[in-house]
Image 1 (cartoon, rainbow, N blue to C red):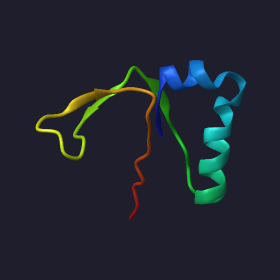
Image 2 (cartoon, rainbow, N blue to C red):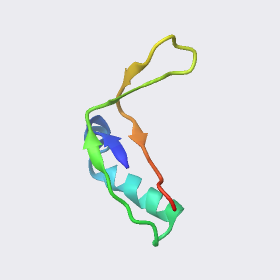
Image 3 (cartoon, rainbow, N blue to C red):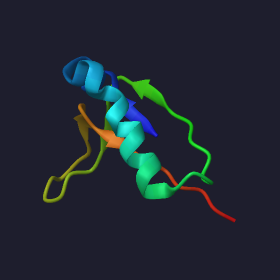
Image 4 (cartoon, rainbow, N blue to C red):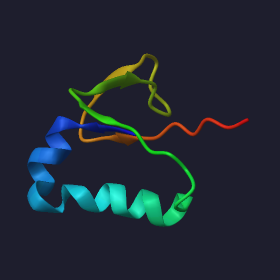
Length: 64
């Protein structure tokens, strides 16, 4: 899980709720890891180029 550091600042003490919600959805058997980032670069629907995004929460699920 990659969460923007701005989200951490905005959410304050509620930031841990992101992890709790992910844990509730994925279940106890899925290992979790993550870090705070300083924004992401990615496409936006309808835009001609990628943009800098912040206040995002990105997850990546790897399986076998």
